Length: 194
Image (cartoon, rainbow, N blue to C red; front, side, top):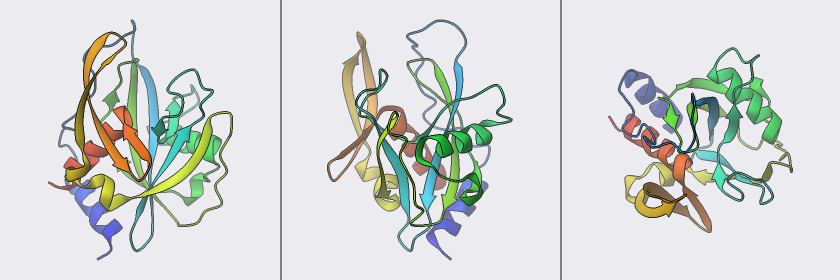
């Protein structure tokens, strides 16, 4: 059985198990959370990869950070899956018809007031992706085995916006994956290890 088929079976078998990291209890904004979704795209290779982006340095929010393709829901989006697929198309030119959706993980709440639904999907290797430069500076893959390995999930503490916060960090080569992106990876790792 392939790595991806094993992942698919474990993910489906763990449906209904609450995510161990639900996000931030302390929010730095008022009002209802903003609905959003991201695509956790697994590249179908003999050694699968996880598709990530590096946000443009000129962005007002989270400049230069590693992130999944995704963003806030539009009124016309029928579901979190629709949001994630639309955003992946807009940000990195990933055609929705090339994504085999496995399912949605539990929502993750950010300190900035977003309620993000991670959508897990599988994509073929070597798609000709194109970064929308206004948002995305780089598109890259990290080995799935590396980011899912709990030995690489490092707990850090820092003061963020005047609040002492704990977060996860995952390092790979010169890349630093942290915050909500790392937390969603940790949730996936914990969910499929059940």
